[in-house]
Length: 391
Image 1 (cartoon, helix red, strand yellow):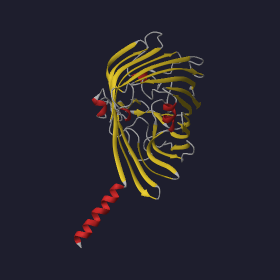
Image 2 (image 1 turned 120 degrees about the vertical axis):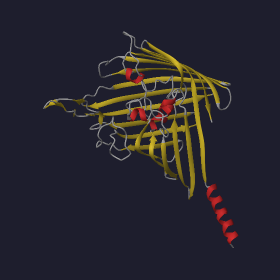
Image 3 (image 1 turned 135 degrees about the horizontal axis):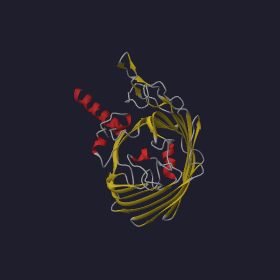
Image 4 (image 1 turned 30 degrees about the vertical axis):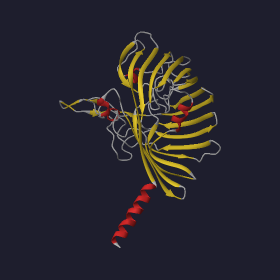
């Protein structure tokens, strides 16, 4: 009897295990890169010339009745700087440095899916990432102008938000709809303090997004409208001053800088496959409203990719126009070129080139480390030759 119970328990455990699956996949991308930031140059071996290096744990469990539980745990890493992967990009402790390459810094979500669609919670990717990669072949790597003339969120530095929830509708004839929400937090000390895990103690902008995606036959199209609310959100810590009282210097903190704007990023991307060629179009507007608003840009690009055996060639031309701020009326022109050679199903040698003549001034020196423009130079170029391997 006891052996029978043990056998039944083992059988039940095996049956239960058969209902679940966990997969591990990832990507490594590294190579030689050269950058000329408006006259200041650097080169070396770094990563992500053609794609993001990272590791994914994914899982699903069949709960019965068409209901499934799903999760994704993603870590993106730096192929050129081990200090970044230790979560300490410098000796200065801050929320930016601590997140440089630490474990679990990518999309982290868990949710349920079924006939109703899917609901995911955690740190969920925005639909704008899907729209962006639908509209051009370079992704967020070199060639697409990501983080400068193009973006997913208003700042150009993120593709997801903390504390977020996303609903994805069922797909009907290739069409689905997404709804995304992350509540604004304004009770924390300030945005530059070290992160704490207690809800509400770290300020963050509120985000809400509506997305529409279509994929049927040779045509793929996607639209995303992301609204982000920065009103009342701490954006910088006030500086300390040391007034002298009774002969003693007493530190006094100035008021933190509060956000006073809202931003809307509307993105449309589409591509159409014709044999070995694929044609892409991307259009994006980024507009800021509220006190001190200085951003109102529109970007449009056209791209093409062409596959010949193991070789895929890519090209993109685009232009951004600024309609607000100090550079109102000026334009930034993008040229992106790329080539992939498939050494196997998982390993590819690549070359990338990107040039942005940034007369609209949308690429800041702050986004390029210690780089500074030389004289009146306006062009940034980036070149990469490397290898990527998927597993």
